[in-house]
Length: 222
Image 1: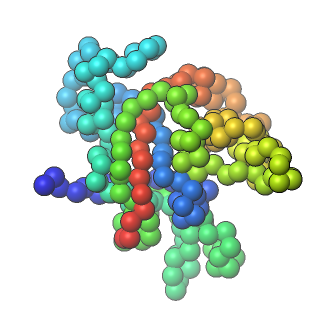
Image 2: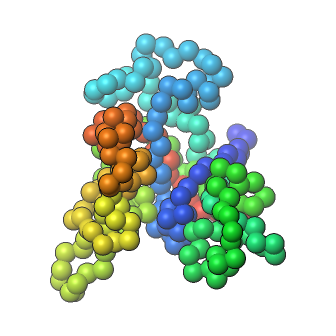
Image 3: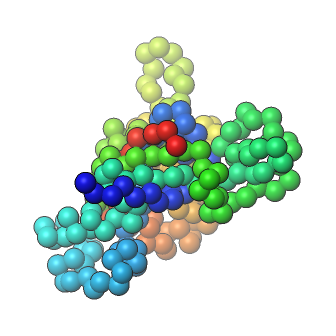
């Protein structure tokens, strides 16, 4: 029986809330050769395993990239790192916006510095695959934890949050995929009005349509 491994994974406060509320069961992370070299202990990537600028992966590469996913394999677990603060008697988390302890926080500790023993969320990987960023479906976009906007009437169209222009739901888009696109732009650094030039020049921007690891998961008890 294969050994179950645990690895840390970073999530922003809105995505932590989405996990806690049962809205998020998947995450997409940009695939790159540097990460593969790290996970494979410096093994060289052969010609058939190079990332094509256009078109599909080489047939022999699909399993290769899945096997070297730095987040693990189905059955492995991910402990979530999130922004938090120690207020003396306990920890409080940035994602818990209704927590009255927030007013006692003088300085938040970035998620990257969270210790394993402080993590409150444990995820089990259920599937790993490689695909182009823009191949995401509406169903998969919903699994990424995007937020629907309230309907104005019972028979009105269901809109979705536009994270690129406003994270508070002031602006909306018509489809889950459009909402996820706006979320990706927001997280990748293209939030309006700052960072747009740098975002457009980045190989990780939406229009570049990078290869991504799709990691699906379910929450389990720590």
